[in-house]
Length: 173
Image 1 (cartoon, rainbow, N blue to C red):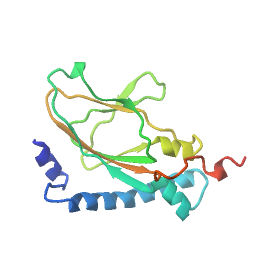
Image 2: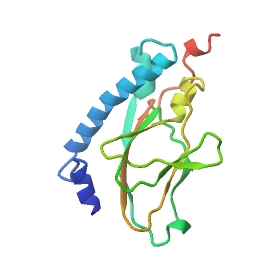
Image 3: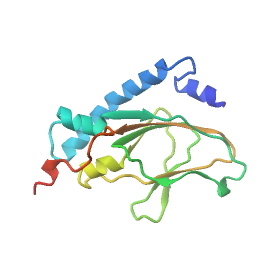
């Protein structure tokens, strides 16, 4: 399937920016709900405007295209890293190639693509804001030898002007 056809498969087209903006707008609703659950897990029961800006004040998306690679064992799709975001929402195609670091730190676990699902990564900013209760996810992408791959991550970040530190309520004790 061509990259253009894959984007169409996900409801995105090259006809303009409106479908992308709509996807981002709808993703923001999902992120707000996820953050409410995560904040409750920190025994904080509301997200005021200041916290909301810190958690999701800036939103960015990428369209990643990984062409098939004749020697995938010799190539890195994207090296190991963690995202600086609060949360990353990833729409991946049916090809796969995303791996996360296991809890023991020695192995990599494949994240199989599930049609219609999103992969949610905790980023570095949420690890700091939560005072380490939520851990950032180290991950990588491996190259594929037989098919092209597309993924579309959305990064929810604090604004560039924000200072990132644990919520005061989490360090009082």
